[in-house]
Amino acid sequence: MPQNEYIEQHIKQHGRRLDHEERKRKKEARESHRISKDAQRLTGWRGKQFAKKRYAEKVSMKKKIRAHEQSKIKGPTNDNNDNKEALPTYLLDRQEQNTAKAISSSIKQKRLEKLDKFSVPLPRVRGISEEEMFKVIKTGKKTKKKSWKRMITKHTFVGDNFTRKPVKLERIIRPSALRQKKANVTHPELGVTVFLPILSVKKNPQSAMYTQLGVLTKGTIIEVNVSELGMVTAGGKVVWGKYAQITNEPDRDGCVNAVLLV
Image (cartoon, rainbow, N blue to C red; front, side):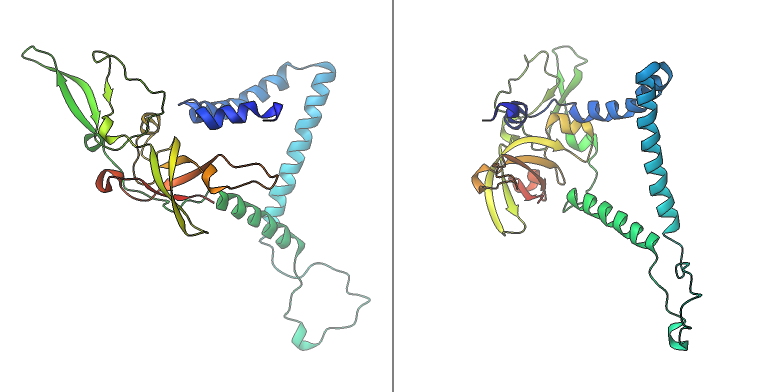
């Protein structure tokens, strides 16, 4: 293994923190506050460099906004047609392509490519209430039994190094019979289905809490081990993990079927 890839290797083998996405979102939200603080605090040479960098970013952003606003302009470009011959009648209605339109088209195309990178087979799924997801477990010997425990009624995924908490401290119970470690993953381009091990649960569209608990429902994005498929990157590296979306309801079928996000 190359010396500079130990972090990627660790992420592939052990996954990330359960609150990684939330921490990342909060960090991005705090970025504007950090920039504002630096703009007020930095002085001297560092302040000049910071202001120069911010000025360049704002200029490029304004250029993009101006190009977008001009993309709706219709009509021929303003060229000096004084020295040119008069156009025939059948060519008067034709218009030359505007450069702003071309810029707008290229920006839209880049956005579509970026969105297509994260497109999923099931964009919308049915919402699941907490009454359907959790079953109330009552404990205690007294007349008024406590009901602070919950049992998950859907299929879940837990890692190999998962250990249950002591019974008296365990608030959410994940039954062993409803735990899944592998999924039937279909490659949309090759048209083959392979039984692959699940590495982690990336995102459950129901809520962030279900993502942390590893609940597998229809539409959930999971990470699977595709090393058996022999997929490689453009640089020649072997792809270890890849995302897939669950297309069935595991609690009804008893298995997990997913489509690979290529």
